[in-house]
Image (cartoon, rainbow, N blue to C red; front, side, top):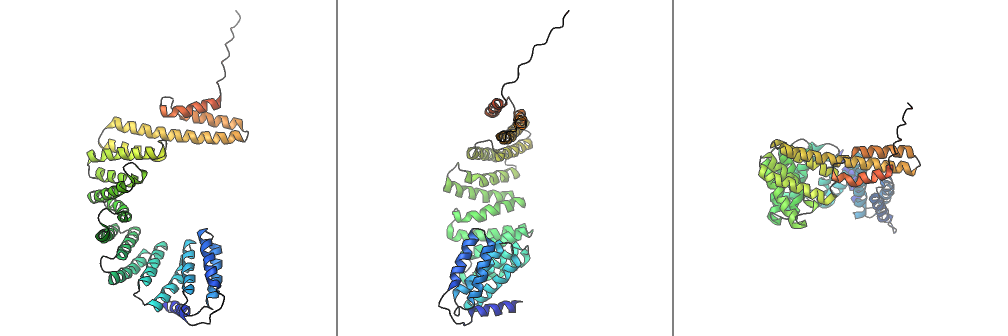
Length: 372
């Protein structure tokens, strides 16, 4: 099969009479514009026309390569992975013929092939391709090359989805060590690997190492965004759980409280993630047998869920009312009101609105006295 790709690649690089007009670039540009609009069918149609026109271009014209590469991108986005691979293999072989098999641009194409294998669910094959990429990057740039770190980072992703968390953790550690040599220990460029390394280490129950990864990520984010921005949430949550896993309860508790504050400040409080965070805090307090605090967290979480349910019912009732269905609207308003707790201050505003919508309760008729 590889011979077939090589023949097509040679056709890309072979001499051919040029045409004065060059529609290929226009068609590729049209395909890219359609691709950005997620109109994959239109992009494919333009590229099919471009591929036909490309046969008339001069030897080694870069537009010919652009067609097959863009075709592989469009087909990948459309989920046509096997056909995308065919075009990508043509592009790889064309690059190898033109630039040599060890050229960095060939390594770029092979990286795309490895990630395409990942999309097709063939992580084992993708890892074999990335092994070749790593050797190429090492020979081209040495052991500290940023491109080598990229290759290890991608290998970690494939190892993880293939069910090899140990290898994923090792690959991420290598990628981080390479980047640190040029970027330093607290550079924003380390965040992608730190953010992935933390969860992998938690999966492996290496809580101490996970804590170190999350602490570094938190320091970087605090330098970038400040101490109170929602961008800190993933690092604070991972750090809290890492300390919890080590039974460092005194360190974990303020982190969970900080996490709750970050969610409240960024969402306004009545949000599902606030309720979920309160559930985590309740679990934490149960572990410490601090039952009253656990119950308080659960009660607040359930109050948020009740408010969300009531708000949803109120919106449905308003929709019914707008369509003239007063009976159904009244029933939905009533259900929403019944969901809320009169003793919780956070429910007061919505309760008041619902009571106005329902109107005053009908006055009770006085009981008639029986004649003696």
